Length: 135
Image (tube, rainbow, N blue to C red; front, side, top):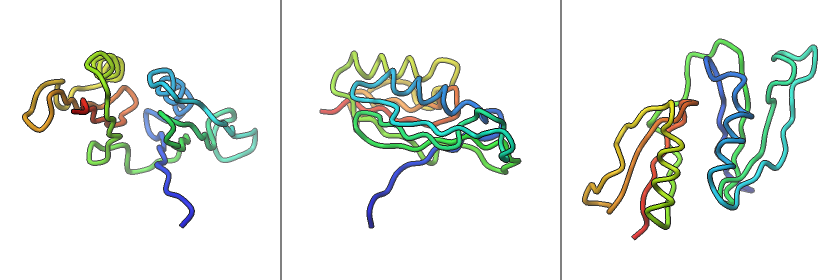
């Protein structure tokens, strides 16, 4: 096996927002960058200019993202989350508040016993994030 990479497909109301989302994500976390973005061309089965495939990193971990305007019967779900280990209170608070803006808190930042500070949210694109303060 060569590798396993998380792929985020932006569908439904989020279709067409893959590039916006990855620009937002890479701006939040140090050591993150957009590696490349391939766009649909005129005549292909998706709107011209939408994201065919994008590769990006968050803190050195590679991800893929794409737009699909097809009528899929699924979307993102909290049963699959991006889990982030934060190193400081300021880091977790900054990331949590930026990610939850126009999204939804699933578990507010708090001490839940298993962690001094933990929060779970769905961001404005529907992607689920769990943020934990490392001990």
